[in-house]
Image 1 (cartoon, rainbow, N blue to C red):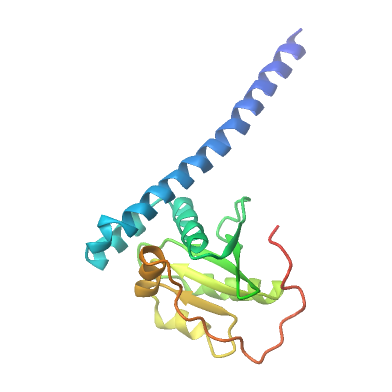
Image 2 (cartoon, rainbow, N blue to C red):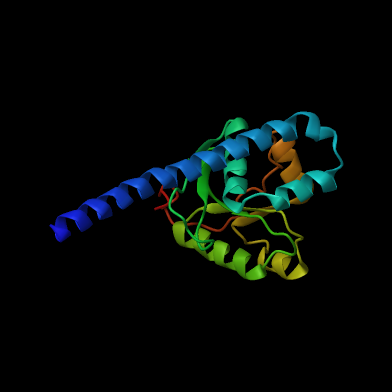
Length: 190
């Protein structure tokens, strides 16, 4: 009897949790859509520092959704990584001119961390893809040093980030280097 009751309670908790996780995700997607509309609407006329402060105050996962939605509005095919990578993996993929690019979104309140850029560079090389490291922090010289001429990662921040969110345009991406990447560019994030 006690075993039956505990199994029932465990099943009820599992069901409640499975309903709660998608609810949180829907809330973040809804928040991202609302903020995207506001940034393209009346808030577009605000000074850049106000718009940037608003981005820095967002929920980090809602910020990821905002970027994914903005890339979709640009006409690109986006694949979201619904598994939480905990900041250690890509947040999604976007297909730009037939090439798969990994996306790493970081909502920093201060200066970005060069270790994050280096880890993302290594992930992109391991997967054989190029990458977009999109962030709200200040790009320090150490982080810029990680992105060299042979890098497969491009940093999008500042005016380029605001242009993506308000005008729906990606900055001109650097052409691929003459460096050969492995033939796994069609691989999907797990």
